[in-house]
Length: 310
Image 1 (cartoon, rainbow, N blue to C red):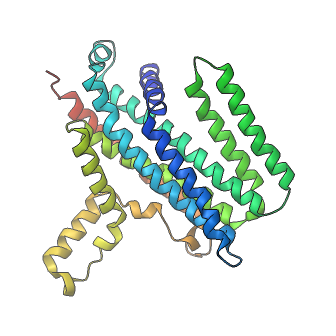
Image 2: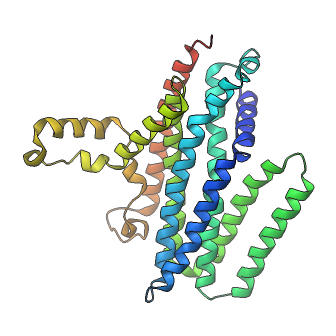
């Protein structure tokens, strides 16, 4: 089973990395990160904070967009090109196919978040003005290594990007240690973003199991917006909105995943909230994402198993 799921996951990752829309969103994410330097130049002694805040926001925003696009189109593309038929005629169960799709998209998102996060951390490392020659040397070295790997690995270029991005993120995180709290905000936000997009991807796969890409994207975006507003919907004042609207808001906040938990306030990520530990909060967020993903993928597998392709 693991071999079949991993084969589908790697194939999904290969197709996703080659998609032009992914490069476009990655370029926008990196441009937003670089633009944070322009905004930071206008501030007074808050340059690193602005870079960290804008960087964390851009990582979250563009990663969610990527998860919606890939989740809405990946399964439909297989059906449209009819490549799913020879795949499912082999010794592959439909739930294994759905799980493989999920992990393939998640691997793509891991590379996306790691590259964007490494860029933000690299900027922070330079802003600290400590060991600048070392930081520049490591950054240039990472780019040179990537170029050599892409040149040498002619038949597996797309798979080079995933481990390279993770190593680059780790290297920049180490070099950005003098940034202190700003580095902690970025790393925590990147981890929570991965947890959030895993839930969003599972939601998109659930809708794509029975709907078109356009409707899947619309439904997933609605779930995302409701999830980001779960805390607000669950606490609507009855005096202003009435008991009926308040009841609907509370029901939605209980049914839809609370995605607002994945964009916590800055003091929480800095460890300034005495009643909440940063480590326990991150662990709880990741655990909730795993549980939600399992439930949503199970529903997707049931729907996809009963779908008639004729």
